[in-house]
Length: 132
Picture 1 (cartoon, one colour):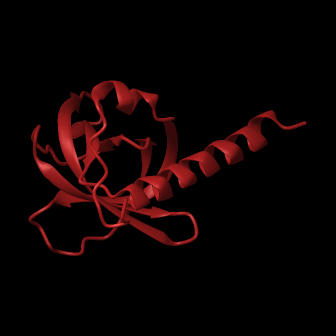
Picture 2 (cartoon, helix red, strand yellow):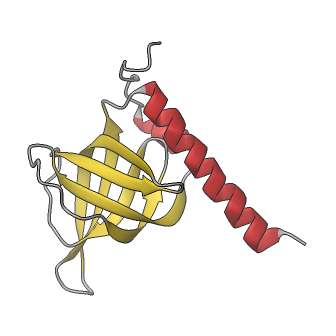
Picture 3 (cartoon, helix red, strand yellow):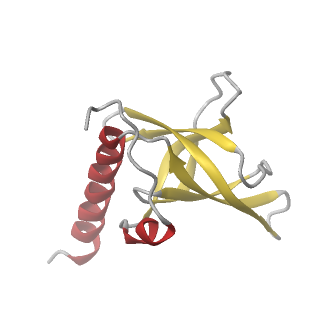
């Protein structure tokens, strides 16, 4: 598959087959139509090759397509479109939400890049917490 070709969309079952990990990363989420270059904000992100879960302070709507930008280790800028699956309000702190989204229109090359970083996060976590 050429590197610019979007990978097929993972099914709900496939999304759960990707390894998930929670890490703190600089992230920016904005409507795909918004072309402003907002700053990236450090957040705890539950991430996999299929999508993300993140706490936000802006109530996006289900089915909206967002532009997701992550700053991965080594100053690697990762960008992908993200479909909002749902947004759940969080009671405390006020005006916060848990966004659940899946990556859409992601090239196979970008998915591999993301998965490589996720595996590196896992190796670092295991080395830090379980090495002798």
